[in-house]
Length: 101
Image 1: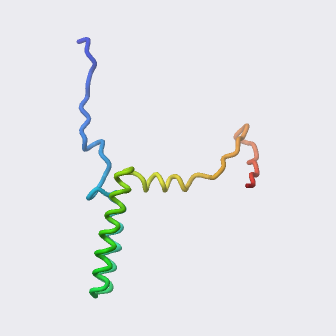
Image 2 (image 1 turned 30 degrees about the vertical axis):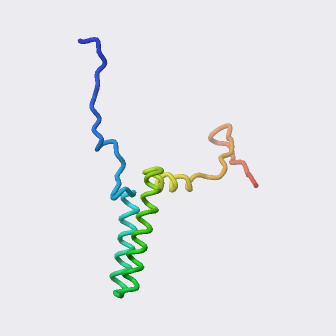
Image 3 (image 1 turned 90 degrees about the vertical axis):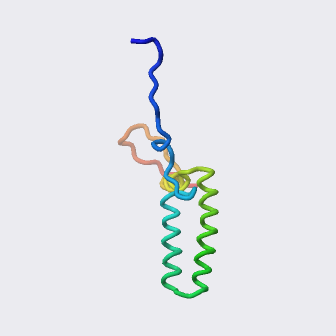
């Protein structure tokens, strides 16, 4: 056995976030679906222009979000599931404390 450290190559494709056009995958597909539904259901020029404007504005916002944090929507969804207060409990069988703000 040689004295050097063993190295393993980690490919970029395994370590990168899933982005489409620089935006989170799920969000851009959702906005694309909403925009397409708006244009196809209404079938007039006003809806088509509104759909294009909605698409372009949302792409800009989603790109800015993904540049700050590629997992921002997932982090936010996990954040809103947390309770505002976790009382200290001495045992697993203790009654929960009543906390009023």
